[in-house]
Length: 494
Image (cartoon, rainbow, N blue to C red):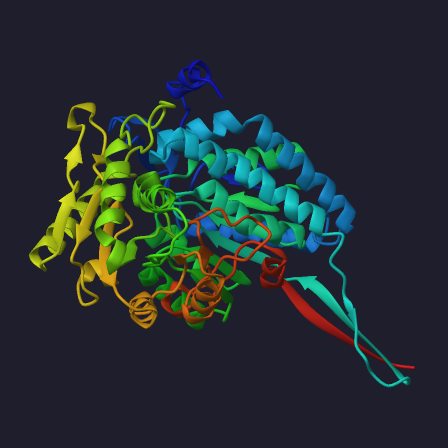
């Protein structure tokens, strides 16, 4: 990846995009559109169809018809594997195009976007493609006069709703196991970042995925997303996003057909540094990246830093030095460490969180301001707050921006209490040189992921999901296949 290649793609004209249904681009029924503005400079560079309930209904009916025809749902696993492997190859061959397109849409720095979006998506699709012909049914241990078989069957039509921070990566976490299992899928991309998922659908068609198996309906969450969640012919909804929307999806399931709902709802993740951490400088560097990369717009971001008192001053000096060295700027420059906040609305929410933290008595050590206004883009300096108590909103509520809350602790028990003091439980980290401390903390912290002496990096082989109000869905790993399959028992008298 070279700067010259990125520059050739950054200003490429993007024709207005339509819905993708039944293997082709189609206009929305109402014909309304949404402008796509780049957070890099605030300029509008294309538009997408503003789909509505009629478009969702058309996509769901198309997906159901494709499922019933069976060209995909009844195909041999080896055939589905072949098509998905071809799709992974196509994503990799178009990786830079997809990465730049996504950055223009949501402002993620290109170094992160390239790895986290197209390359991650290709790896995810390849993982489930390779798995699909290696996952067996079961024979139950019955008496000799009965043969009991447990079959895995695809659910049918899956609705996928993904957020704007990593639409391609998170989309693949849901699309890949759903497709590998034989389902048809309708995707409602985020209105702030729909372009890469529309391109993915084109590549899937090119790879040989039958028409109607993968459909993409762009539009607003309150209209198209709600229609998808309420549709009576959708068998499951897989969602990553806010808790407020997650609650509504559960209500929509109850109001419609009791469809399954799998939720990953973000967090307020603790990052705990003990005095015996093996390398404080490395811990500070990784901790800064764990909250400030992608402008803090990461569901597993380590947004609560909990530092043992005996090393507090030394660690904070290291952290402030690392933070000061981070270069914030044009996300399509390879030299930028941090890109843009995804939208003006999100930037204002971040700034409001900074102001509230100060009103509640937290001490701002650095950052928390809008910067680079002359670019027309939405950029913010990383904010670090000290003296944050568990009662403050900055300690309890997700900001989804580059804002770090720092708290001291003395004992291990106090660290556990602070770590578990929120309603969330998605991710966490522990820095310690003691294997015993690490194991105790892994068991004591209420979170779906506990990192030890690192933050982030867990790959596709392990599940991602939360405890408490971080939701109960599980993306990644072989366990994700269970969410897109039904178990069917055959009880055969011999």
